[in-house]
Length: 115
Length: 114
Image 1 (cartoon, chains in turn green, cyan):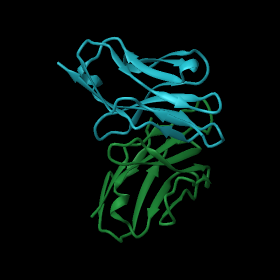
Image 2 (image 1 turned 90 degrees about the vertical axis):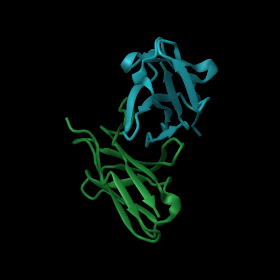
Image 3 (image 1 turned 180 degrees about the vertical axis):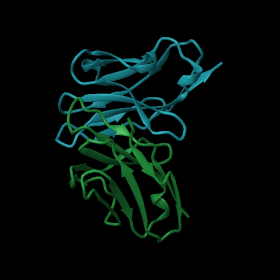
Image 4 (image 1 turned 135 degrees about the vertical axis):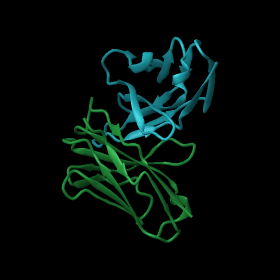
């Protein structure tokens, strides 16, 4: 079946602009996670959705970052007033439901470059 | 709080040699541990997972890992390296508090020499 998909695969934007990154999870997966992977680092947690609600947004670095999942499927990560430090690969993962042994399935990521 | 340490950001082995990638964790509760592999420009792929059943876990592509509570370790091994194993490997611990978000190590890049 189809895996997790993310669009766009690459996004180049100018400092100060607004961007949206989209994640399509595996059908039927209720748990959705966003991570950010900076160069040379492991992925870092940003936000977790269970269904439509953000159950844990403790990883969002500041209020320029926001994410939604209005229908409990597709999610959009939104970044306002982008800064060069936001440049990273943004990974989305989904899981059948939170808990064990439900591993997370990752998408290929969106590489964001802020110039 | 959970954390993961991967010793060695770069590891080189000869083709056919043993692969050993190290992962140590800290956790206040029994952990759930994972190894993922990332090929260039691709997403993370699950190699194997430990969820408190058998302590020796076998995964895909001939990899296995052993959970050692006394050493707080979950090292990844493969008896014989293939060129196709060259990739970046991440160890992760799952936060059991309710979200089950992953806390990742910084990764180990494996290079396989011909």
